[in-house]
Length: 376
Ligand code: FES
Ligand code: FE2
Image 1 (tube, rainbow, N blue to C red):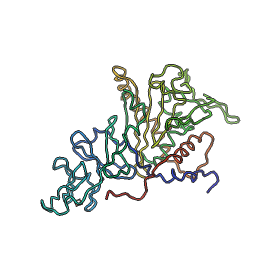
Image 2 (cartoon, rainbow, N blue to C red):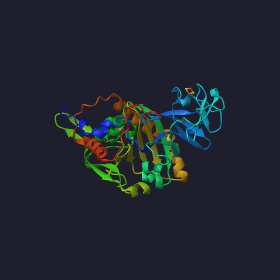
Image 3 (cartoon, rainbow, N blue to C red):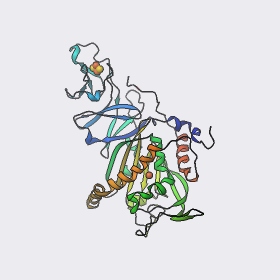
Image 4 (cartoon, rainbow, N blue to C red):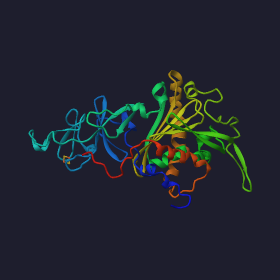
């Protein structure tokens, strides 16, 4: 072990290149799945999403015959998908081989082969897929378990993006919860013209309801660095910086105020970040795709209905989508792509990273194996 290389003290985390089983993960928007099947990869598993009337079904994206992706298949008969190569035709609800076009109606292999199916549910317009092991007839836990409680319990309006970015999901998750980068990397983001952050602060991590919350103590908006010079994150046109926690100044949205968060940024398993501003919350899901790619699902949520909700939606499409979900988080994606770690030499603010890794280590998680998985 190299000096300062803390990496190898996190065996579960280190092994979780493809994330954790037995969780629901958001993928693409439900409206993106029409008549045409859509392939997605989640935790290294290749899945085809197929619309079947009002619902979307998930099947292992591989024909057991010769391994052709079913996402290239034809929708010829109701409730089925047919492999484009030899016409093996599978039921969408159970993955069972129903007919083999090129072997006649009495094909003896019918009913003896099936492709694995994946539970899929739609929430917030997104398709959540269950990656995990279920016994015969067993149902997965409700998807609400893997969605922040305030999103299950309140009415809101949202804007969002779902896209695949370079880098392992763990680097993306660590970047999100990384204390120091928010103050320095994003200093140049256009978004920061409107939201002022400290130059530095002492950090504490508080654990509550499964979330790790980053608390800012001793906040410094600018600082004089001996022998180097002065650095400030203040903006001359923006007199009042953000309070040191959401809702502190009494101007917060009631739902956000009720969360009574001691800090802006929180993270929880299986890789969900929450950045709470006084009036809205930004969420990021880091969904493992493969070792080198992460699905980055960003939601900007405002707990409003009616005219205020519509106004927010308009503001999201006109500005926030580009400023925050575009340029701001593209800075994160840039770092996640170019960083070369391990080895690493951590510093004081990195206790946010080590708290997250420790949290993973002490949680009861099933690591997704890195060997290629096959449906059958
Ligand atoms: Fe799918 Fe032959 S490979 S039917
Ligand atoms: Fe960031």
